[in-house]
Image (cartoon, rainbow over all chains, first blue to last red; front, side, top):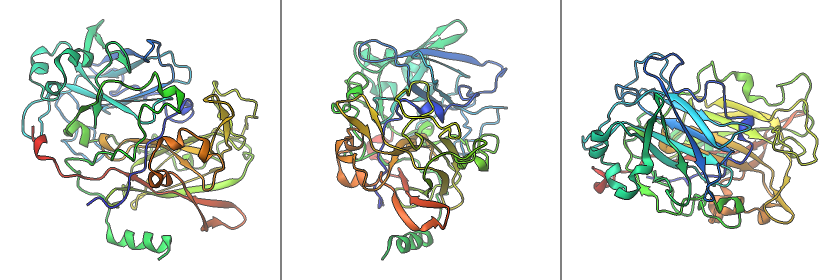
Length: 188
Length: 254
């Protein structure tokens, strides 16, 4: 029963940093949370150059598979200080990002199959007229990843672009918007 | 029936979204601009060339964050004219409206964030260095949370148009950037609100990246003499429509 047209998307532009970031924005969990780690990476354009004026957001469940959802949907997280949402954007960015989070639990699909731990990502930038969406999976979850019904929809040779690599107690997840090794983006 | 009357009848028909849908509408092709829009030159190296992979909506996509708590959003954050000691220069306006889903149900208690150039078309950002004056009394950013009927309202200064380097004599129409969280990851929207009858519309590749004329109209606010405060501020009104529920396609029961 769709009766009203959608408001179209427009680019976030180069100047979002005057309004959108806030100091704890990049933290999906409170600092000092046991088991918290960072996910870091660099966002590259089609020429292989870093994209300095990007805005990256994540959304995910807590380790028990529960959410800090605005309306308690999906089972309300009982983890102290868990936000599940992080936003990274800088006035003087260098194309990198760093967020603090925990590994989410496994979640069922509508048909009851188990997904692997995953983090949804929205990426905005000047030169992007709408967000692009990807997912972060974890390189040390080989068994769960092999069973994941969303990864199964991705051509096998491109699945690696969705896997964060364990590195120094955290993970590295680079995003290539275009070109060789282009990251898989989803139609949401 | 006037716009105002139709809004009132809508408000009586539809109660706010209470249930969380299990699946959301996807943007019809004519509504969202293509990521590859050659007239907007910066898109050339910043759009994926591989096809997007269809993502069925699971719990992660139908949930969304609560960012409207009092620690992050204070009532005065919605007044961009009172963030400094003095008053900003420019034409004082209010910008207000409602956030709905595509079924016309209001989205209450959802975060609305705005940022904009000052009256001269200059942003308070270190990379904006075109020779127009900065206003020491204007930062250009605000936020608020919609009320029980999905309403938001900002008091600000009418932003100026400004030149940019996309092509010879390129100017952006005056606009205010809007960020909407909605209730779900699937509803997230960043967009721009424009003003009626802007002379730069025909020449702007960002505005015209939305190919459907009716969809472009939905980015343009309307002037309201009813909302205008006598001896104080002119009113512009703009309603925002985020994705509403959709039936789960049979093949997605995966």
